[in-house]
Image (cartoon, rainbow, N blue to C red):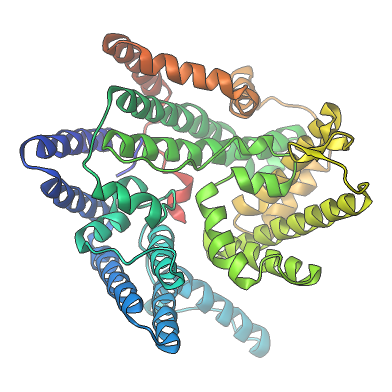
Length: 491
């Protein structure tokens, strides 16, 4: 049930009416039961066979967290924590990486024996459960937080099940922390006119990003270039790489906008997940802006437990690299994703080394302002713009390996760019304009976006309805014959 389909619109309209009707006539508790049932129904619409998995995983984590909170013996508490981590990562590893492990084992065996590499279909997992990477991380983080004493064990089994399965964030995030979502299910639900207007605005913006920008770039540029790069000039291939950077941002941030807006219309607020990532002036800044819920999760539950930056410089670089390699592998069972993670780990290490070198050369007692000193080169607009440009191109270079199925395809793309040919019959003005809008929208001052959002929220209901009707017409005209799945559904 894709967010960019009429089926989801009908589903959400029924959930919206049913949810608030229950609040008014039956109370908050029946509403929670209703939301849990429709969330499980939403998940079953993808593949009902995996519904017991999310229920069992949630139940085990809920019970283990309560047991950890009651237990006073450190070794017993640690054993239960290891059990929940092993269980969650075991589920994730089996369903998502089993086939990858079999293929690599077969390739290694073929290399050693000279026999053809093959894996029988009987040993393969056909399709991994949708959203398993997201709900596994959410549920596991709850147990870890309880173990650390950062969160008390939740008393309500029903609310915990809903926390894991709540449909707006279930299949592709954002990765919502238990401390952010569980308290909202404990409060009496409410929806103000301002929150309703904000929710509708976010859903509309998300659909425009997805249907008008992301899908059109994918269908008319990105998919064609990445499938047969040898058929295009260097300029067209480079445009395809830029197009993928714009596509994946508009696709995923558009999904997030729809998810946040949908939740807000149900009286639940999710945290921000994107903050104009292509405005970043280095890779560390990029990861503070891109998929914020994942980057902070990796920081809090992987990088810091590994030691973070508390040890030697060499240990810090090691921790950065391990975190990004595993972050790359989290995205998919492919060496391309691992290499993408390696590139970002390497970039983060170089960024840190450069920043440390600048700090060592800084005169003692020199004051800081906004992350850079008054005399720092990064405080100068032209050089900062150059840093943004270099960071963007490094991210685009890494996106090539994220997008292609094989390394040979990535080499073919880079080789084609190296031809420096400039003919561009496959770049019509409309397509160039879409690409420009998708990328340059990052650099629109945030105050203008806030003004537009505030104006929509403050507008009378008839005006909001008219604007949404115009958006709906535009979406209908721009939509392809079949709804294009969101990129991050595969993760």
